[in-house]
Amino acid sequence: MTRRLFIACALPPSVVSVFAGSFTVTYAGDGPPLSTEALLAGVAGHDALVVTAPTRVDRALIERLPPGVEAVATYSVGHDHLDLAAAKEKGLAVFSTPDVLTDACAEAALLLMLGAARRATEAIALLRDQRWTGWTPTQLNGWEITGKRLGIVGMGRLGRAIAARARAFRMPIHYHNRSRLPADLEGDATYQPSLEALMAVSQVLVLACPGGEATRGLLHKERIARLPPGAIVVNIGRGSVVVDADLADALDSGHLAAAGLDVFDGEPTLYPRYYTLPTLFMLPHIGSATLETRNAMGQILVEGLEAFWAGGAPVNRLV
Ligand code: DGY
Image 1 (cartoon, protein in one colour):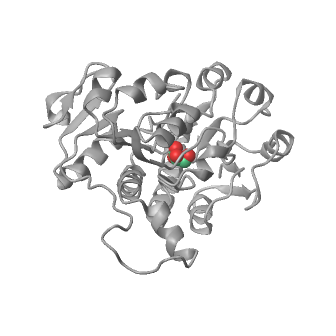
Image 2: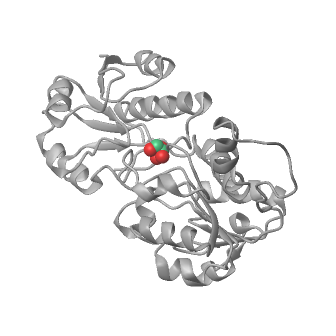
């Protein structure tokens, strides 16, 4: 029997084809995220629901899922939008897309570091507003990241992939994680036992940790104050990790030289001061947005669902 999938999020056509190659697919289309009622009506008669980060699959929604829905597959590595405990209680299997977007997100983290350090927001505006009057030695001088101490919050797959790239910039790597990495994964990186200790050494700080309650507001004004003057902050994880007003204050005061953000609390609505800060380099959550990665994300979900229904133990099953 071919399993039936309800895809409730917009996906590139090549990814819809990947799903359709293995399952009978109902695709909700490229519009905005579905309302709860539209999603519940759409998923009726299907075996699995495919969503992505903006759609909250909370306890209330899970309890209302129609009988017959056996699995939820999130087209994302982050899963702070899913209530895993409620899914487990309901007997739902949940799948995500680990590993396959690590390289794309690590590349984006480097783009944020460089874009912030080299004042890309101001540089692009100068050209696009047709205000550029020609090269001078005083124009838009930024900072090099080469040789600067890099602090990474969250040394999972993504943190380690960022570290690997930062080594090419001769950046000494420091990190804080829930637990210290084994020697083979740690390499030459220095474990800092607390976030406070990490802040004190980080000339460039990269947040590469998951979202959710455990990390909400992790970067607040007391911790920002511990960063060396002129530090650069980058967030490639989740917007909820940063206290927006505290980051904006530190950019305004000049304590932070610059920041690069790909993710925002409450996105797509941004903290309004962010639009006005010249030293803030922002991207609209494009960390994993490459065609290679998009296809690989579809493929890993297909493989996980196929293995689940074949009675196997897929590596990308969360509960
Ligand atoms: C992810 O996969 O978690 C990306 O950030 C998209 O939400």
